[in-house]
Amino acid sequence: MSKDSNITNGVMLNAYPDSVGTNLNEMISMLQRPQFKDVFSLFYVLPTFFNSDLDRGFSIIDYNLNKNLVSQEDLKALEKLGIQLKFDIVLNHLSVASPQFKDLLKRGDKSKYKDLFINWNTFWEGNGTMGDDGVIIPKDEFLNKLFMRKSGLPILKVLFPDGSEKPYWNTFYQEITYNKINSEDLIKVEGLTLEKTEWICNKVNSAIEENKDFTTIDFEDCNHLKGEVLEIINRNRSYLGQMDVNAKSELVWDFYEETLKKVSDFGCKILRLDAFAYLHKDIGQSNFFNKPGTWEYLERIKKIAQKNNLTLLPEIHAEYGMHLHDEVANEGYYIYDFFLPGLTIHTIESTNSKALLTWAKEIISKGYKTVNMLGCHDGIPVLDLKGKAINGTYNKGLLEDDEIEAIMNKIMERGGRVKNLYDPSGNKISYYQVNATFFSALGESEQKLLLARAIQMFMPGIPQVWYLDIFAGKNNYEAADKGGSGGHKEINRTTLTVHDIKNGLKRDIVLNQLELLKLRNTSKAFSGTIKINKTSDKEIDIKWVNQNEIAHLKANLKTQTFHIDYTEGGVAKTMTF
Image (cartoon, one colour):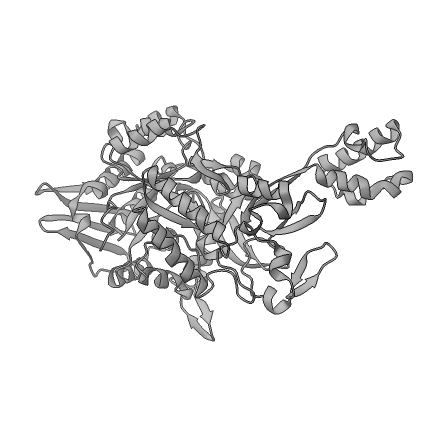
C-alpha cells in the first residue's frame, strides 16, 4: 500500500494531553517506560493541545499551545522518542470565546470579523419565513434537505451591542448559562422599590436554579416591567458554542493559512480535517458534503497543506452506501476506517469473518490509504456501516440493518449509550454511534479484546490505538452522567493516574497488547504486501510479506484464540494467545 513519504507506517497512539496524569509530560513519562519502547511511531494528540472550551477540545479558541497541558519541552521529548504528531484543525467552526467571535459580540456589525461567521437570517433571507422569535424558518423544500447533528434549528442567538439578538449558525454543541441577577442589575429599572427589587431577584434566581422558563414568571404588580427585567436576564447570560465559519469569506482562508503554518511549526505531520464536510453551505443543499463546493474547498486546503509539508486526513462520517469514503480516497487522501470498530465487534460476537474480510479486500483492491481504530475519543460508529438509497437505487452497506441493530443492542446490554441524528423538528431520523469503551463493548472479555487488537494490527492501514483500550478501560458511568448534553462521550475518556499505569503494566492484557503493537510498529513485513488467505468464515488468515520478513495471523473465532508466525531479523518466531 502506498504511503506519503513523510509519514511513518507505524502504530499511532490516540489520547488527550491529560489522558494520563495531569498534562502531556506525564503521558511522555509513560512512553519513556521500557514497556513502551518501540511501541508507537505516531501520536494523535486531541485538540485540548490547543486553547479550547467545549466538546473536550473541538471548540477552538485559538491554535496556540494550551500551556496548562503542553510545553515546548514536551514537543522536543516526543521528537527524541521518534514519535511524529497528528493534530486536528476544526474546519467548520470556532468557539464563541475565540478572539474573532468575541470581537463580533463587542463591536457588532462594525467588527472586522463580521463576515467570518454566518448570520442565519442573512444566509436565509428571501428563502424562508420570519418566526415570532426573530429567526427565519427556511422553506420546507430547503429545510427538509438539511443534515442535522442535533434537534431544532442549528443556531445560537447572541446579543449585539445595540441590544438586538441575532441567530448565528451553530451545527454542533452549545451551552447557554443564565447567571443569577442581583439588585444592582435592576438599578436602572424605574419604579422599583428596594423591597420589590429583591423580590424580583429571588423569583428570577429560583427559576434559574430550577431550570424553569422565566418568561412565565408572574411579577404581579410589576408585570408592566417584565420586558425590561427579561432583557436584563438575557444580557446577563453567558455562552459556550461552536460557531460555524463562513468559508465564502477570505478571512476564513487567511485564518487557515496562519493555522496550518502554526501546527506545522509544532511538528505536525498529519492534519485531521475535523467536520470538513459541513464547511460548504448553500441554499437548497443538505450542507453536508455539498458538491462540488466541498471538493473545491478541500482542494484549496490541500494546497495550503502542501506548502507546510502536511498530509491531510479528511474526517467524514457517512453511510457506506453513500460511497463518500470512496470518492475521498479516489482523490488521493487518507481516509478514516470508521467501519472497522463495528465490523470487528460483529466478527467476534457472530463468529463470522465474512463482512470484515470483504472490507479488507476492498481496501487492498482499491488501494485506500487508511487510518483505522477500535476505540477512540468519540463513539463506536454504527451509521457508517449502513446502506443508502440514492436516486432510487439502494447501495448495500457493509452489514445488514438487523446485524447493525444486533451490535447496538449487545453494546447497550453491556452499558453503552446511543447518540442519534435528528430532523429539524427534533425527531430522531437515524442512530449515529454507540458510546462505550471497546473493552466493555466486548463484554469485558480480555481474550476478545486481545483478538480484536490482533485483527486491527493485521488490517491494512495505519492502526490508531486509544490509550484507555491498552489498559482495558471499563465504562465510566459516573463521568457520563455528569457530562451534560455531551456526557455520553465521557464514558470512554477516563483519566489514568501514574498508579493506574504501574498496576496496568503488571497485567497480561496490557503487556500482551503492547507486544502486538510493538510487532506491528517494528516489523518490516507490514511495509510489504498483504494477502487474505481463503479459509472458513469461522477463521481469519492474514499474511504480510516484505522480501524475507513475514507476519502471519491465524485466528479461530469460535475459540477466540490465535497465533502469529513472524520473522525478526530472519529468525522465525511465534506468538500464541
